[in-house]
Image 1 (cartoon, rainbow, N blue to C red):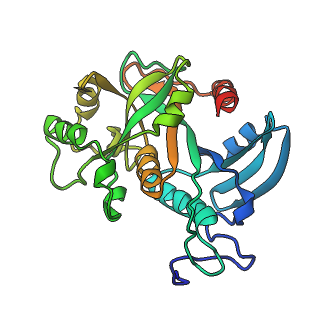
Image 2: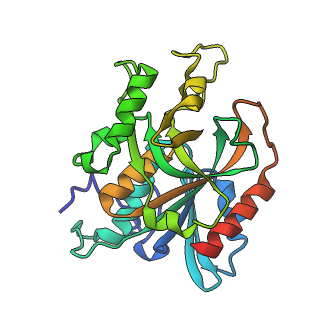
Image 3: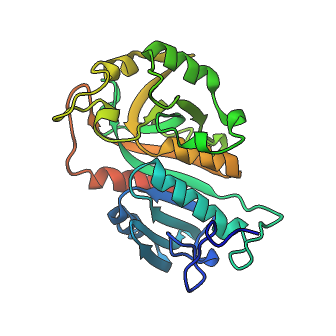
Length: 287
């Protein structure tokens, strides 16, 4: 039995932050950051049966080619992913009235459709990156028990030594994508590799406005890093938590990002709607 302060519901019985009822979601869920992108993607649906929103969490559930899909916005950052994944899991695996966990867990499949910045010259704006491994600089997964079996500890340890990572920052953790979901896109021309999930947009991604960064060479170092033939492709801010929490809860997760800027060349696509729509159609066709 969950305490009311741990499993919080609204007056209508829906889960607290997402404002959703158990029947409102599909077992196939596309996650985006921007609430406006929910409307963009769901415009491709042939039918919509649920449309709800609360705070930054906007949800649409509908059908595409007789395949039911939920699209939901997370907002920015691993802290929002912490809310999103835990509450989506609770919708299908906990009785919200009694707080009792269900005996036969439901497995959800998450695809994060994001935008991102390329870290190498060969990850140009306009390309697409499929995140095989997410490296979290955020520390969120360290607050949960029993995650060690999920991690690619060798990758994290080599990266820490290579970067001379300071003890004042959270120890990076590396988590692999859901192999079954990644296999769905084996014939797509996506760039595959490692993604860095940063706990912020500016200094944590090597940007300096009025404040300097702890290491002004970190982006160059990340771009040159290689581990067992895998290279770091891009920065974003959600995948480490998505992969980590999904793995702990028994769900499947994959991130596919449209690259809208390149940190090496300075190239940036300001109007990336067409890129997102094309990527959405490719995902919906195979998901």
